[in-house]
Structure formats: C-alpha cells, structure tokens
Image 1: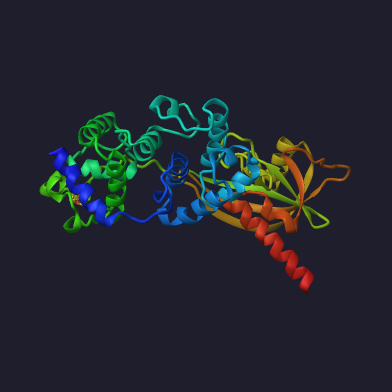
Image 2: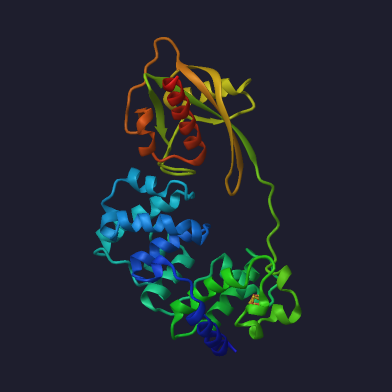
Length: 360
Ligand code: SF4
C-alpha cells in the first residue's frame, strides 16, 4: 500500500502545495530556521518573523556573529525563547566545528542544541533529500488515523507503532516533498477536529476513515491540571530611567529582560512583601513597594501566571550599580530590550503613562 499512498499524496502535493517563503529556496539554513520557528507555532504567525529574520540574518554566519540581544529581539512575540537561544548557539557551533555547513548526518544534527529527532528528519529529508522520517504532532495525528491507532499519544506503544509505520511509508524518491505533503495535508484536510476526509487524497489508505474513528483519533494523553502562579514584580523609576534585570540563560524566557520579581510564597504576608523579598534575593537591595502599576494574566503552555506589578523605591541608602545583567534603561529605549509578553505590557504601560503625563 505504501508506494501507492506516497504516489497519491505526492500527486496531490504537486497541485496543492502551500507557497511558503522557505520553500522557494530550501537551503539547509532556511529549512532549519523555518522548522525551528514552526515548532508549536502556526504558519501564518511564523511567516513575518521568518522574513524579518532572513533579511537580518541572511546566512548562518551572520546569525553566528550576531549579539544575543538582537537575536532575542527579532524573536520577541514568537514565544519559547529557548528556540532562539539554541539557534544562535548552534549557528556558532556549526561555524566553529562544521565549517559553517549544517551536518548531513542524523546523529551529528541531534548533537546540536535545539535540534531533536523531528527537526533533524525534516532537515535531512527537505534540504538533503535523504529518506528520513519527520514526525511532529501533526504528522503523528495523520499516521495515528491512517493505521487506526488507539494507543494514547506519548505511550511507548504509540511511539513504536507510529515509528514503524513512518519508516515503512516513506518513499526513497522525494522524501522531503513527502514529509512536506503530510504537513500540508494536516493543515488542509486532516485537521485536529472535524477532518475533511471528503477532500483527502489518501482516504482510500485510511483505516480510521473506513472504521469511522477519525474524529476520536489520535487518543490524547490525560491532561494534567495546569498550575496557576501569582507573581509580584517591581518597577523602579529614576529620571525617566527604569531598572531592568536579565533573566538567567537557562529556563523560561532565558536571556530576556524583566522587571525583577517572582512567585508569591506562602511566607509572604502580601504581594508587596513578595516583591521586596525577591529584590533582596535577586539583586541584594532593600526596596519599598508602593502603588500597583497593573495586574497582567498570561497563559504559558504548562502554567498560568497572574503578575502584579508595583511601583517601588530604593530604601534610603541603597543604590544599584549597572552590570551585564542589570541596567537602568531610558523609557524611550525599552524596545531595544527583548522581553516576554507580560513585561512588555508593563513596559508599554509605563511609556504610555509617561507620555500622558508630559502631554498634560
Ligand atoms: Fe485524515 Fe480523513 Fe484523510 Fe484519514 S481520510 S488521513 S482521517 S483526512
């Protein structure tokens, strides 16, 4: 069945392939950048980011020699900032260890930060025409339906079945187009809810369609409850300058700038006390937390936050010196400092308030 399935899918792809900026010149660098951007992110969202990125960093070398701040700034709003840090780090490794060329070997690709099995398979098949499977969430959904797999996603049984099927179905001829055809099929017909099977070029190969199980597949893993954190953040202003701190490289929003603060702990009697404790822990200074600037909610993939930002002052006798990770930034220059969504909203609010104040 597999050869016919591939023929049918490729014939459909030849007519219906989406026109996407990275497809006009699928160089290894272009494929790599686009695949990293597309992780957990919709194609429509990625296109303007990709275009800006390639204009600013047209080559792998130009990315490798860039400043991390600029890399994160170009990524701001796309989320999952570890992807940008890893692209940058990997570009530097590729220049220093692989003469600026992306490796054409699965294991070597996997050894680079940020490149997992899916991305390695996509690069090898699309950019190097190697017969490598590339199974992301969308393709896993299609395969689960094609083989009528009722094992929940994430279980070893599901992994084995999908992996075996992916290998058996991948053609030697045009493997990159085959993988891209699956990506397009996932967005055109084999949708997560209500798949449009009447339009599907491989309906005849689909066991879920013949068993009428397509709407209940794939079987999702049981959802864990999402934690909800209450966070306090402090804003200190001095002569139109505001204090920003750089987050540690590792972890959420690593390398981005923020208004320092942290999670409300049980021992904190108030949110203001939480902010004061966090500043002492992170910056070693005593501050006095005052009026509320605003409350901001944001949902990340695995948790939700509710951030309460307070206007603060340094306690008498305290000073904060600038360093690599602590800066006094003029309100007019906040845009040059990459931030997560909540911190950017706080920054915009400060700029707005300041402008209103000056226009009165
Ligand atoms: Fe998906 Fe329907 Fe096509 Fe099966 S027939 S692959 S469920 S769109």
